[in-house]
Image (tube, rainbow, N blue to C red; front, top):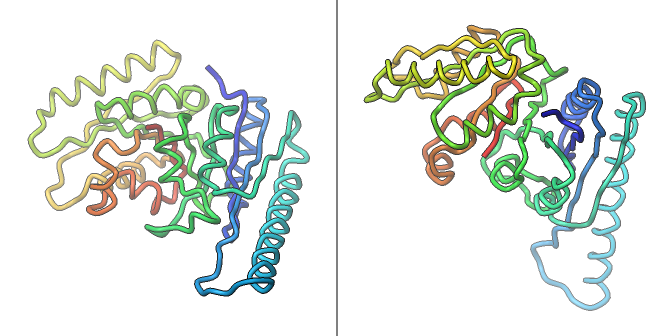
Length: 277
């Protein structure tokens, strides 16, 4: 397995430099094609008018969106002009998430930016929280502060769920290029640590058969710490530049209201995060 096509989702009114840098590096590492995508819709004003004035507002708004999409294309082509390989741009006047989800059929992995807010503008931004649920591809979330794809140390956040199993399989190309791989499970209060360790050891053995040497680890229980906080602590201990995790092992609504590992990884992590659902 490899990544033959890398897709990068760009957004209006957000910084795109980090995700373009990481997507370009990813394409170079795997000699992959790179496809840039962006879409936006004109958001009508929250007041009423009619006739020629209404049409003028709509025309001006749509023209502005088209100019800004053209600006994103120019930024994408400038960032990829020296990357080599196939480069392609796709854009549309559409809802961003809907457009990206449709275009992802041609990609092996989708690169997106992170976001710091719970709610986002569906007219201008394809939220990673929406993409990961429906994209059907691994989603690499890149925080704005990232300057490169650091694969010196990769942390796999293991929980024995279908989502985590898919994430580890989706991450195999990167795990093979990593210098160090750590698999960590964060047990819940009533979990048997020996059973949890046996599961992590199984994953390490599976990775070994795929040419990846990994260290198995079970986090120490911390009564007053969330799973997200424990995961962040382990990531700091091993110097992880990338975290691999399954997305929304619990219901998305529960994570949105109560918080959770996926919510924290998407909105707060300073590291790149590969998510699969």
